[in-house]
Image 1 (cartoon, helix red, strand yellow):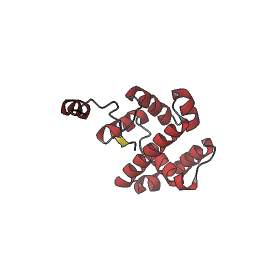
Image 2: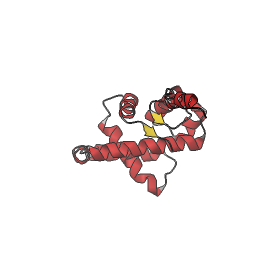
Image 3: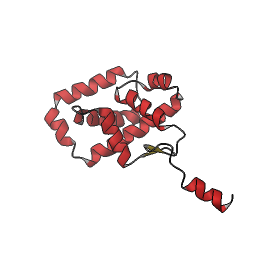
Image 4: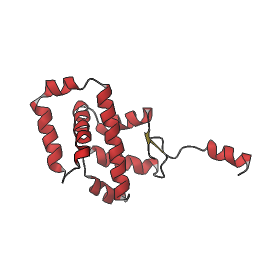
Length: 140
């Protein structure tokens, strides 16, 4: 590859500013994020966005991991103590909508519920976009 071409590819505009190293367009990712923030299952999201089911599962896992990291940064134990029964009812509703989850992902789902409960008075989609704009996901 010539030097001129190298610089062209190196400084080419990023395709998606919310997720790095992906071939998914920003518009399609925002559609995925809208359905994810609505609380739909990954199977339904895959069908509606016409993305591969494995890709949707991977993106959801990355988002849940980011939400868990954000909850760990913020003192969220106070939220659970203050909320008490309401929070755990919210978690039970979340788990009842799912057909089943893996044991290793149970913590991430609880952290996702915690993050959503902390941002219940805001628009979840815009809060996620703001969080991802500061630090994009890395799809590797």
